[in-house]
Length: 142
Image (cartoon, rainbow, N blue to C red; front, top):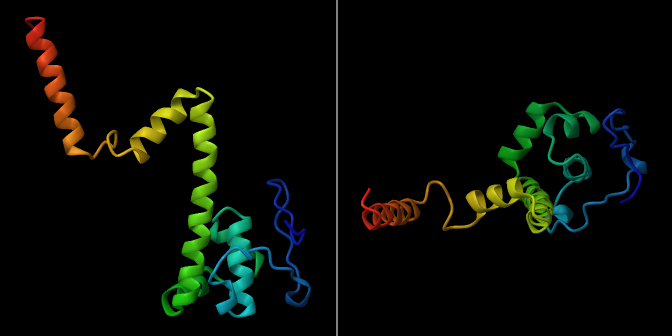
């Protein structure tokens, strides 16, 4: 990652003049379709883990400007969505590492949110569990 800003929690992001900024969001397929300000926002959004307020402050733009861009510029909206997708992939990787290391909270979270058989809003799974419990009760005369 290029060193254009500070991301430590105890120190706010440094604002870098546009002419000195080096873009680090090159893996975003929509980035080349944006103007310089929007490119920098998407880059900051990625570097700041999707934190809209901090990304706006780093540019600086208002949060309303961000939402206007999001609503009126399809390429910008796609670039933000792609950045969010990359962040989700990174978080998923960490979650899988935690689950693989035996972190039961990670395992449960992953299964409830990602695995189709364990999703809480999966009525088929709930029916299977209820049938299984009913069979066990019948087997044991409960």
